[in-house]
Figure 1 (tube, one colour):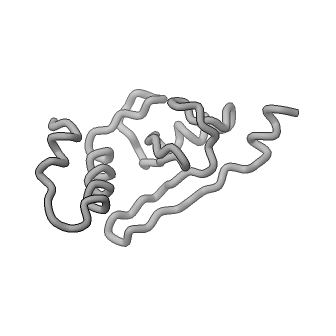
Figure 2: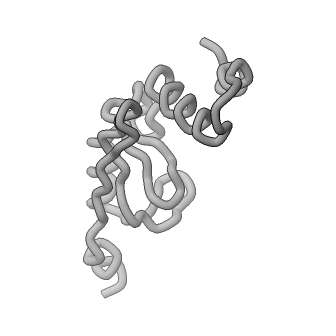
Length: 105
C-alpha cells in the first residue's frame, strides 16, 4: 500500500488544502491503524483539536478514563464522527466538562 506522501503527490487541481483533507480522510479509511486497538480504524473518529484518528468505540472508551488524547495528551474538546466526504459533513460530539472536572476534584 502506498504511503500517504506517495498517495497525495498524484493529486492536482482544486484548492490544494481541500484536496489534501479529502485525500487524508480517504487514506485513513483505507489503511489507518487505530493507536488504541491496533486494528484497522472502524467508524473513523478524529479528535478536536488535535485531529488524531481512532475507532469510535476505542476513543469513547478511552474518554471514560481520560479526557486527553492518548497520543499527544491535549485535552479532548470534541469527537468528529460520521465524516461524509460527499456532503462535506460530520457530527461533532462534545466531551462533557465533567470529564475534565472529575479529574481535579
